[in-house]
Image 1 (tube, rainbow, N blue to C red):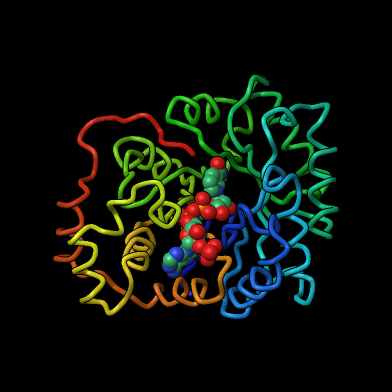
Image 2: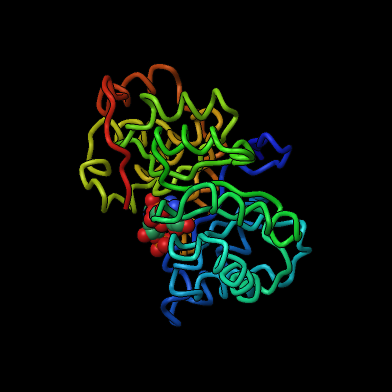
Length: 283
Ligand SMILES: NC(=O)c1ccc[n+]([C@@H]2O[C@H](COP(=O)([O-])OP(=O)(O)OC[C@H]3O[C@@H](n4cnc5c(N)ncnc54)[C@H](OP(=O)(O)O)[C@@H]3O)[C@@H](O)[C@H]2O)c1
């Protein structure tokens, strides 16, 4: 499976598994666990969760899903909320995540979005968790260019491995300056909402005639075209959430699709790359 190597040497599968809203509804729990296990058994190593998701319910579900497997076979990423991203509260928040996930370390811990704590204090707290072995690496999420510049100017700011941001065919703002900046500084981009939340964020994506024509040519669904487009980006990891087993299978199948230059040109024409700086999209 295609892998992205981080600057610390960690290898993440280019396709990861999102888990927002997983564990929120008992009716879907069994299938959500089956979907995550299918992913793991088919070579996906990255699971993206957060203390915020269902107030720990997503982390608990992930903990249950990974329980039959060797810990090293999964790459666990969780996130700390802004109000916990300080010297006083971060370790407690991390301990809660570890408990919910039933593990003793996180492979990656992200600062979910920027709050009021001085960035230097957050970095210090993240590094402390790293030195204690509770996290192996850290990164950020929803950071725009100025945030990344401020971070990388700090002592040990260069320990940041990834920035997780919104990116899909219909929201390509990061291509203008943020993604090139991250590439230059060897910071990998994790794309959240690669399916635009099944089109909910931008309904016209799923109905778009170009997306549908490309889907017909690849013999796949419009959703798979969206994911294949994100997977085709260099130094980028896509983390679609699939609570349904069928969706997980379709997402893994995307790793075998290849968009031709001509198909990419048509998609670029329908949804152009930005020609000016845009504000970072968030959900
Ligand atoms: N860092 C952040 O601030 C942030 C923000 C948002 C999201 N995230 C992370 O990114 C992950 C992905 O984002 P997201 O969950 O918001 O949106 P998404 O992955 O773009 O879309 C998820 C939706 O797409 C559906 N789906 C999945 N595969 C499909 C397929 N092959 N065909 C049709 N529909 C499909 C899912 O349905 P089923 O579940 O029913 O299969 C679900 O309704 C999250 O789960 C979370 O881990 C991070």
